[in-house]
Amino acid sequence: MPTWDAKQYLRFNDQRTRPCRELAARIAIETPKQVIDLGSGPGNSTSVLAERWPKSSLTGLDSSPEMIAAAQKAYPHRTWRVGDIAAWANSDQQTYDIVFSNAALQWVDDHAALLPKLLTRVAVGGALAIQMPANFDAPAHRIMRDLAASQAWRDHFPADGIREWHVQDLAAYHDILAPIAAVVDFWQTEYLHVMENAAAIVEWYKGTGLRPFLDALANDQQKAGFTAQYLECIQRAYPVRKDGRVIFLFRRLFLIAYQQSA
Image 1 (tube, one colour):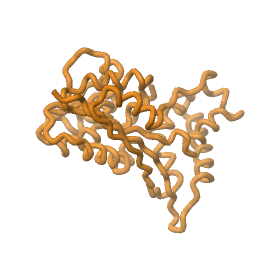
Image 2 (cartoon, helix red, strand yellow):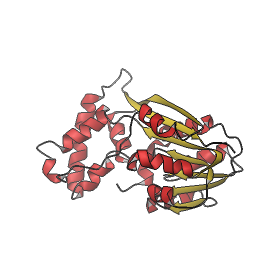
Image 3 (spheres, one colour):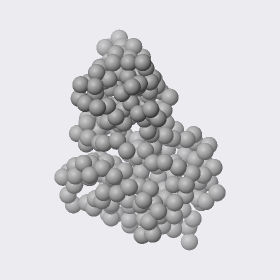
């Protein structure tokens, strides 16, 4: 699991939080009592849930102590827990009216086993709601993989490669959840983020997808060199528009599985 930097992640807070808001708005449950946010990060997604359901009891869970520390500092009146999502799914504890996860489950293995377990943690009549990136083959991701595999860099990375995030297609998630849920609602959205320049795309990924690659490098000099070459490639892949900015396409996948009612 990569290390996380809350300050870096929140540099693009508005763009990262918009999908979270759209997922929360589509959940057809008006008065949940207990809500948990899996992979809550620095608390931005949990804050959205608090706006949507101000009377609910909210818990944020994240595997990163740094992220939880940032969340506790920003929102000290909420409940925060350091924990692994897969371990939480396997634990025999309370159920929640809404089990929510925004841009986190892509880092957890074996979704075919994980998602049914998460649904068991949903109370009767509740919902499992998930958002994940769905742009694994986008230019920005292909570039970081190709650069790491290049002659100049391959010896600096593990021989068995970098453990990246992963998602399946919507049909696969339908097949996983439809047999065990009362209703499954799923969709994809492609966001067009207008960025100030190509360097902003690099800064975006320094908070997420680029982190496993940077964590694998031995020192700051290597990290800086890899980042500089990545920027050169990003500049070629994302052309400057007439206003001097660049358009950054980002596809995201959304799932809501409703638990059977009593």
